[in-house]
Amino acid sequence: MKLAILSDTHGLLRPEVVEQLKTADAILHGGDINKQSIVDQLRQYAPLYVVRGNNDKEWAEDIPHDLTITLDGVTFYMVHNKKELPATLNGVDVVVFGHSHKYVQEEKNGILWLNPGSCGPRRFHQEITMMMAELADGEIQVEKISIPHEVR
Image (cartoon, rainbow, N blue to C red; front, side, top):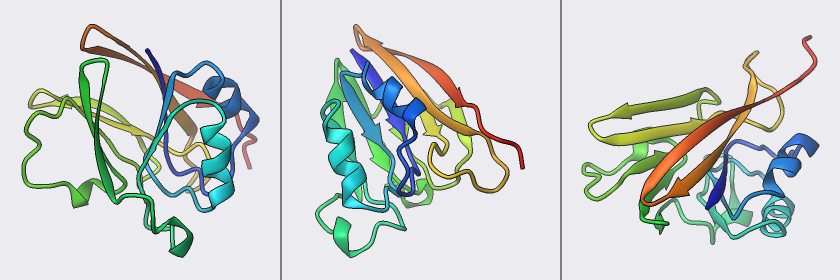
């Protein structure tokens, strides 16, 4: 199973991101979507698992704050801001979060922590990134996708 993992699109779905989405079997979005039309676009490509970010206001009331899902034997816990994690993450293999716009891929205490960074408007002079992942036999392999941008 191939996953597209993204966050902090902030109302912008770049063509380079769309090309990656076309190959995905499922999409995980870590919040700060900013408008319903982005959710609608994402759902055109694959089943969407999404959490609400701090910039997702009234329009996003039906989007959950956090979400636990299991895909191909891998259990994901999703939340926008990792400071809002529950005290225990029993049974969780992977935490997907966003908010900081900084790419993170690290394993701690048997849990894989993933922040795909931001693939929306460039902010804070950070690179524009997302992730693609392969799930097989309860294992996950993650690839960082860097999206070229103009340096200003």
